[in-house]
Image 1 (cartoon, protein in one colour):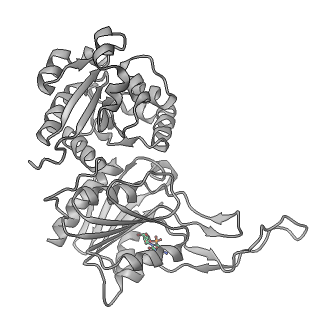
Image 2 (cartoon, rainbow, N blue to C red):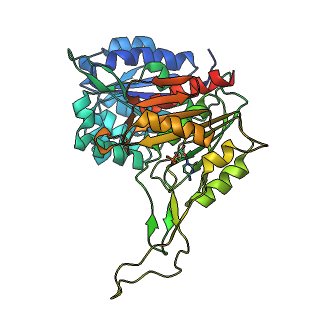
Length: 405
Ligand code: C5P
């Protein structure tokens, strides 16, 4: 076991959900990696695991109450929140996420989370309907904007009989790995150690005039997750990203661009690489001559946009004579005949692998957190079950490593 978290101090907030039983294993995994773990057990969390069990496994005193005078005298919630390198919230219940998103501070856990100046990683765990609820989505989006990092949730069976879906807490090992990435630990011995990886992500914005652009709805979540997973696997990663509202993944060199032409240029500069993953939703067209001043509404009606085709970055890189990465991976976002279109794209663009997904509005993939993908290569088609975009990323990285051999 590599000591990726050697000498790191972690404050674990255990919320009140059935997944709290896994927090005991999480403490073990974090300690195995060298971390010192202190825990705050919420009142609801204490309904699922006892302070005695948490204390026995962490080997540290367990904190439960904001108004415990002894705690306030010798540690205090402010110090508890700051004398740490990272706070992990696992399980992060819908209630805890709502409190965090709104800045509530009415118990020790929420107060510490508001008082901290350290990175925070949350591992949501709840019933799929609760995760899917507009209120929870809103809270999660706001927390992401606030720089809070997420790991999971995963798809799978729920504690409630017969229920399954997106909402299971990420596995303790995944949470420990995400913590290591966040703290900038390099994955010595990871499957991509020594490899160079380029990932494109997000939409491109093609200017019409100084205030208007042609764009698309890509959030960049899948591409960013792949870049983060590659970094966790030890790769040297350059992420070329269009405009997104996501934080930069830990341990990744991020090059920010606006247009397809800028993206192509940035990818060219980042070569050579062993793997290139083109997850960006590049605008197919740009306005031939963007105006230098704002186009005004007028009597002559709407302006005619003279569009020209953008360079195909994936096809350009896949057909390079020199410098072609050993593994060139494209994405195919389709609203119908997903696999058939992906097969054609594989041939036309000369890439090694296409990750195809259904982005019809009903699928919720565009902008959402989960994805159902088909891997299309010369060897055939493989369909993966629906899972979170971070799980898709992890599995893709493992596959890339296998393919590189
Ligand atoms: O042709 P289509 O846009 O559907 O192809 C999608 C794949 O090609 C994605 O991997 C995308 O990142 C890549 N692409 C590109 N440059 C473009 C258009 C698409 O790299 N101009």
